[in-house]
Length: 353
Ligand code: NCD
Image (cartoon, rainbow, N blue to C red):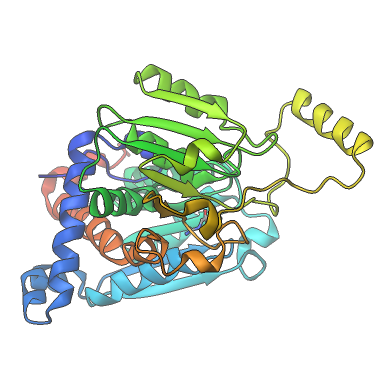
């Protein structure tokens, strides 16, 4: 089967067959990596990545996403070129994401992975690569590795595999998403993927004002997903999965409505010592419960370290799923690009002179 998308910008592009296929392919990658001999079945991909170069553009800090993507390319024998940090790229001089991406693609780059602090930058980059394709006839797939507070679809894909591994299914689950849901992009993308599976109920647990943005709720409503919003941690403790997130304090408050800002100011004036509220999970709270605990990491005190050894603490297994899932995604998108670029039809994309 072939994925229904050519660039991965948003989890809302992913269909149920895409999601099932990616989870399955990631499992195959994982199995293949357990045994070096078995890895030969991905030899065709090794060959496919030979002489191929992936640009890894991280204009915002990253450990897991960047390392797992770059390792995925290298596992397949490909080359990686990295742009590290905003201040060392032409973006610092005021270049647009569109120009930057299009120029980089032109250096015989075969796929572009980008993380950027602005919402919507991923769409801008993908559109620029479509323009590049119109100009040159060559398709360069784009993968969003996190755009501002908006989305992080590849994290959501590996989260989906983790839920399947831990719970044995993706349907009929109660999944609680906890923390800074306003600015936590992983939750936006994961809710979209969970909405593809029937019978799931989502509980969004937020301290204070950090509620899920309206556009994500609208998508869930349009897909008839059952969900509720609460202001306490307790309901999350009895869910099948409790997905914790950190407070994204480095993000600006843009995107907060005037009313939210006004409420925040009032609170600040009347409770002088108020700090950004946060829920903290401790082993005591989890006693007697087997709720699967997930977190995209990095954590910032939301999960006490005494939970790490509990069998239901899944966040390090979750992080490890980044490699097989990103191998699956990259190999599929690059395989499609290769076929399209080698077929005569791809020239149909060339803009008439
Ligand atoms: C997340 C991110 O960058 O959005 N981390 C990740 O990719 N694993 C979550 C975060 O930064 O809090």
